[in-house]
Length: 288
Image (cartoon, rainbow, N blue to C red; front, side):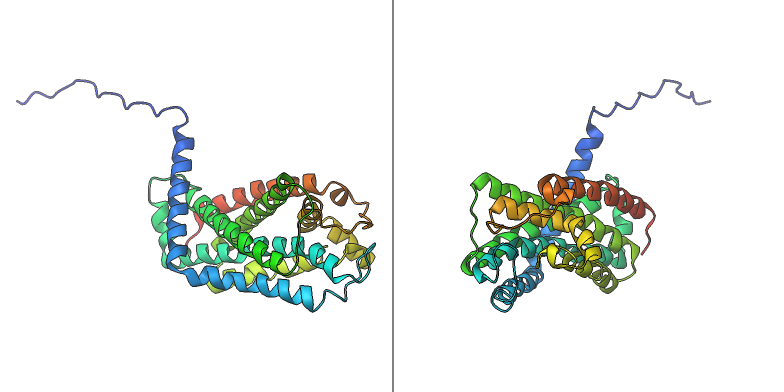
């Protein structure tokens, strides 16, 4: 008879404290790198993404600039141009939602999401990596757009820290909206549906706001919606931080308009927490 060893099996070493967090960060950065490499290899996606905001800058500045009556400033194309730019910046970062949704939907359609879920990686790393990559692309787009805006006459009138804080709020809003795009991308069957689903609700959100016209000129119901719109809070905060409000511009009495930086911060963090939770849950059960 062959003797059977009864020696106890050595216990598996315990995972180091914080290993779960480190793994999540590492996996997320790996997925972000994968998406950034993909963007570099398909530069036309980034280039075409710049065309729309640039056209908005030119069209609104020179076609509508002399027709918009700003409270406290009247029909002044120069002041309207400065008033407009925070709205264009905010619209640009939120429209990244469609790209995030389409990218995730494409991965779903190709079966990549199922492959990723079979790997020993943090469950939210695929989505976090995608949103980080979109944030980098959004930042590059904002830099180019700011240069174009400067060429058409946009100027800031506050110190550099306030200007950087304004762009920080824009990027935070854009990052928050990419989580909405991630949820949409996981919920539809094709990239085309994700693109449509990511844009259709953005148009009323951005136009029923203070981005392009003062909310004071709107009907009562629309004015209240615009003043409590998270998009409007970020736009108003940026105008204050950039120094782009006309000298005698009457600020609405709604709390988000009186404290726009805080309102923008609260809205963006709330959107991230809510939609990231829903997106990660959807990711665990989504099928191509």
